[in-house]
Length: 187
Image (cartoon, rainbow, N blue to C red):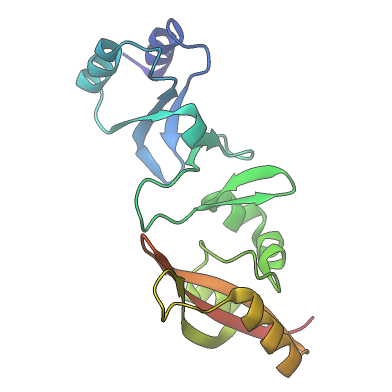
């Protein structure tokens, strides 16, 4: 049985289905559809005949506009961070954003308190000319988690207007987000 067979079975019950590999894991097959309209025995049948299968709803996944691989767009745990970039109205998986749109991704999140890096490593940021300005910021529901990216950016731009700033999320929990600020000389 191949993926086309599974898709044909799923489409008997739901017209809005897709099947393919998860963008960061070629061994995982994603069966995406409206599982409220697909009988549970179909899911059990697929699960028995394939290894490494993920079942999800259509509103939790989409496809990369470049490579066509499936990308998860909804959190599945408290520490989940997006590994895709939505640039110019098209979604790119992390792999394609790194390969095809690295500069666009970086420029999109620079000097914007509403956007933060969730894909690039510390080393990649350094290669792009950024260095850590300050780490240890926390935003959350507890009294000591009061750091505001908007206020931090305003203060930094007043102190050093010749620098570009980039926020990078270092961790996420149920009620908080940890982040760093990187800087580089403005272009």
